[in-house]
Image 1: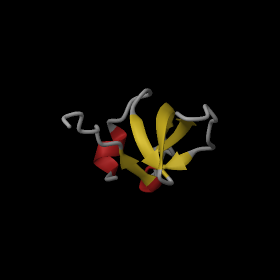
Image 2 (image 1 turned 45 degrees about the vertical axis):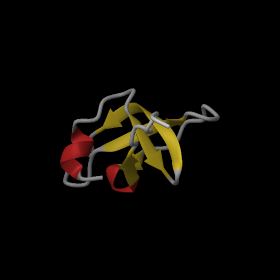
Image 3 (image 1 turned 135 degrees about the horizontal axis):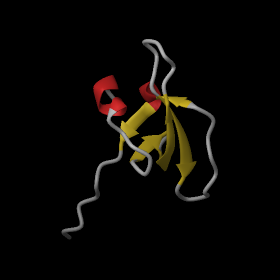
Image 4 (image 1 turned 180 degrees about the horizontal axis):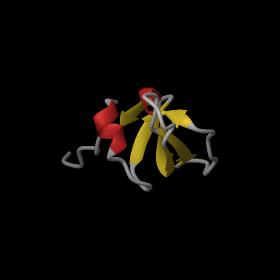
Length: 67
C-alpha cells in the first residue's frame, strides 16, 4: 500500500495483513517519515494486533458478487 493511500484510511477500513482480512481499529502517527501505523482487529477471530506499519498492508478488494 502506498503511504498517501494509508494516510487517508479511517478506523473501520478493511485491509489485508499477512494474507488475512483485518479491520483498522486505530491510526497512529510516528511523527516522522515512517508513519502511519495501524492497530488492527482480525475479522475472523477478533484478536487485535500490535502497531503495524502501512508498508505491510494491502487494500482489501471488494469481492465480485456476480456469479
